[in-house]
Length: 87
Image (spheres, rainbow, N blue to C red):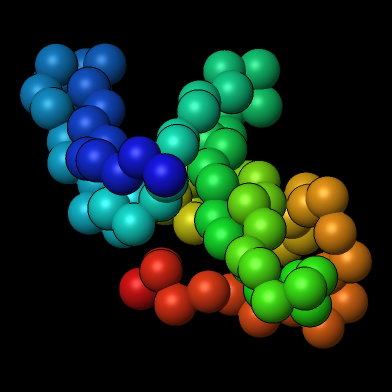
């Protein structure tokens, strides 16, 4: 999984804004239509003791990127546990 920095540009001031809350998001993909950012996380889906990559939707709340409820996985997430890769 690829991680990095998320930097946006304020359209009025044209200044760059660093978003430290997104530091642990992996494989970020912006979705312009919904103004969200998709990211990948590893989840323990109780599927043979292996971690499964799942897609998480993140939305902008008061200028900060926050995780939305629900995720998209290829396994049963009923009793899921987030892997200790996000802080």
